[in-house]
Image 1 (tube, rainbow, N blue to C red):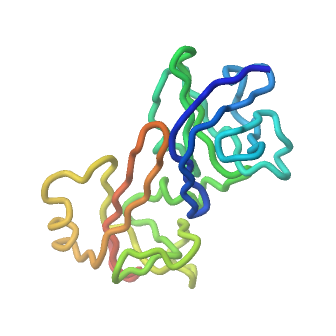
Image 2 (image 1 turned 60 degrees about the horizontal axis):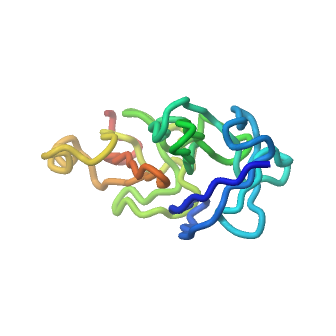
Length: 188
């Protein structure tokens, strides 16, 4: 069993937890592979890799053999873990997450549910849905990964956008996706 000390922010299910702790991993954190599940042991940063996916809150969705790889475009990711010495990054999300509903994979022309098209505020369970779905509340008219470029928000309004929605990933690399939103009936 290996122990690696980490500090950061864990974001998942709308809950933000701050802390310092350790990642406890059977076989060492470097042995975690895509599909392995991860379970907290007494706190947000005491995690066990190799947990039962039926009860674990996280599953390894992608693994990069580089430190601080960007997980932001991995569909369904909610958190990432990187280890300095071993140079790898684990992209984590809920077990069994459906990539078809992942907000971070939404592109121009896709529709979202759970976000107010007028304000960009979450109204619950933001997810990508078919535009014909009655739950669809907004259409993606523009998308910008990272920090928005100069003029992004003005371009959004010029394209018929009514609001912006910010999706973000934290720990250890904070990255975001900005979505320009408009009514579902507006073509991108």
